[in-house]
Image 1 (cartoon, rainbow, N blue to C red):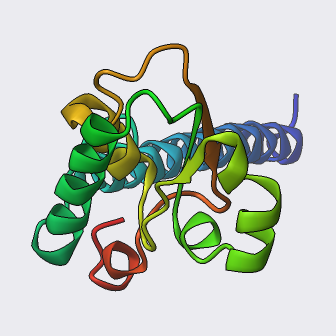
Image 2 (cartoon, rainbow, N blue to C red):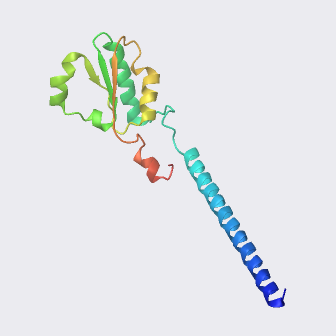
Image 3 (spheres, rainbow, N blue to C red):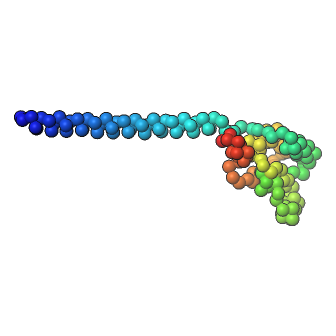
Length: 155
């Protein structure tokens, strides 16, 4: 075997080994990148409000919640259906509400800005207590996440 052929074989082996090393390195980088992205997502999820966790809002919202609790207690025999939701329920046009629902024992318990967590809190904190065989309608759209959480980087 002459020296020229040996050098070419040596260079060929070196190129193959270098290619394998580069491929291995790129795969490792991709895996590390995926782990970093996954970790960042987990950190963000850990900081966000979980929609299945009940959460009150305080202030005017709490006063309104307590007023609905009192209304349920005082009118438990008249209430046949309860509509929960955010602003889409809260601001239902009175002409439509009164024409189709109010006369049938339905009540509008919509509170603008409510999230899924808020509705769960309200149900667990007495808004439906004492109501027998009542139908519950949750009329809401969107993810049920308040915009201030998004704006304050909580999500």
